[in-house]
Image (cartoon, rainbow, N blue to C red; front, side, top):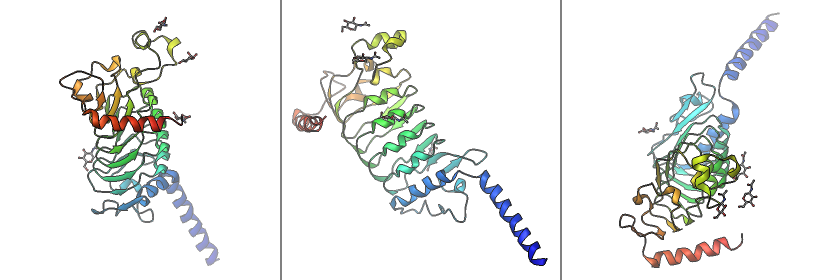
Length: 274
Ligand SMILES: *[C@@H]1O[C@H](CO)[C@@H](O)[C@H](O)[C@H]1NC(C)=O
Ligand SMILES: *[C@@H]1O[C@H](CO)[C@@H](O)[C@H](O)[C@H]1NC(C)=O
Ligand SMILES: *[C@@H]1O[C@H](CO)[C@@H](O)[C@H](O)[C@H]1NC(C)=O
Ligand SMILES: *[C@@H]1O[C@H](CO)[C@@H](O)[C@H](O)[C@H]1NC(C)=O
């Protein structure tokens, strides 16, 4: 009898725990955060030292912010902490995430295309790291994005026209990377009718001429070629300086031809297999 009582009590405790557990973060969000930590090879200031699934609630982890009900992660901010490592694709699972701020670390490797699944993301700040490779076209699926900062990395490749899908975008900082190719304006020369008249018939349009809320777009110090799309003419010309663009403007000084020639060759080589 005593044994039965004990096991009933035990069962009671277990179900209480189960109830508490069902109130906390979904397991895929905890798993995503654990993957983020695992992908780090160096953490000199030990900012991830309390990131431990066994003895604490992830909502208390350094840099992690949750909803008031503590049922979803909505923000991750770990800036200027000299974190070294790769960006875990699993982070794309945290679909309630609104702000992802990893500015000023030593992050390496590519931008994971899975992060295009972060459909609630409003702020993405990966500036001042050592990230490489292109911007995945999937980032055009981050349709809630307002602010994207990728400045001061080693990113390469062409700018994907899909970024034109980011209809709420206000601030874009792509300066101080190694982007090549043109600034994609639109697929047709008739884009101005779409912007001003919102004619549904031109829904097919791609490229950066679709941005309507844009205030800042810094493309400076890359290897971009061609001309600036007319729809971006209103931006200050210093946002275009230090490239290989065909513009004559004293405030938008371009790179010497020697630097641009070499970049043109690699653009041609990269674009051949397409
Ligand atoms: C992120 O954290 C840093 C300090 O670690 C702080 O200065 C900065 O304001 C925070 N950014 C946001 C958007 O919360
Ligand atoms: C995201 O974008 C890519 C490339 O632009 C596309 O192929 C894919 O279907 C999109 N995924 C979703 C879930 O919208
Ligand atoms: C688009 O522009 C072309 C010339 O560039 C013109 O022939 C055509 O009529 C225009 N279409 C629309 C819908 O304005
Ligand atoms: C989209 O544009 C292409 C040419 O760039 C054209 O062939 C196609 O018919 C257009 N589609 C729609 C739905 O307007």
